Image 1: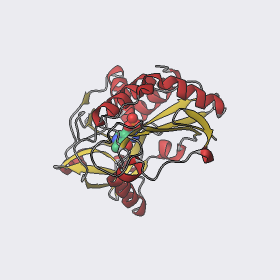
Image 2: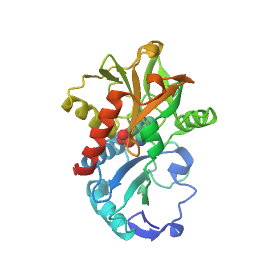
Image 3: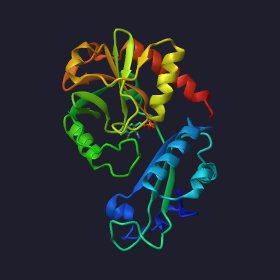
Image 4: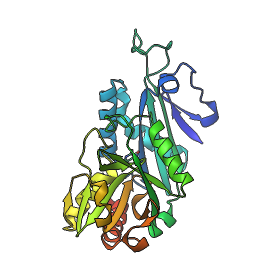
Length: 282
Ligand code: PMP
């Protein structure tokens, strides 16, 4: 497999990262993930914009982010993924320097690593839905930055996995914020509720597409966090992320949601999303 590493296209086993890399030492870096639909990325411009924003927020300078398309198209070509589904992963860390919390001086160059890997969608989850658990949100308040520091997300997903569930929903101040690797949506009386953009969530590219598709379908959307104690009133629940698109939730903390099967609004949005993703080339 060919990967991108600090300006070069290499075999993966030729990559070596310094043990002084601040990504390794401090999780001092950001990342992006995009889905390739055989001949285009969905939401390329939005992903690139979010990457530029994450980099700016953590003050890492990587000017090549403006030319991301060169890297993505070269990796797709080198790995012969032109006609397949794939995921693009990119990580940029502040670089390698003697351990010190303060930014290194003179400034160092970032470490950049990117891959494209063939991807098979989880059709069982997409069709039958998933089980989720809920947990207190113990993360920082800059979840809007797509940081590689994912320890709370990993611990939450591990708990979900140990409970036989596929995702963990975070609750902060009695309100559902997002999932460990997804945004979360609740349907109540035909209205879709999702947490507003803020430091409490990552502004998912899939979330934002889902919101615009709801509006096109005349499904009302309210960007308001769903109150955890009102869970019984949710008719349907679904999640969104780049790899899964729209995935129904059919149980929460062991209790069935929407009768234990994907809800009608969720299905309608999911089908619309699937069609949109195949043609949307922006
Ligand atoms: N929130 C978190 C915490 C995530 O990790 C992800 C997936 N990266 C998302 C939301 C969904 O974002 P996107 O739709 O851009 O994949």
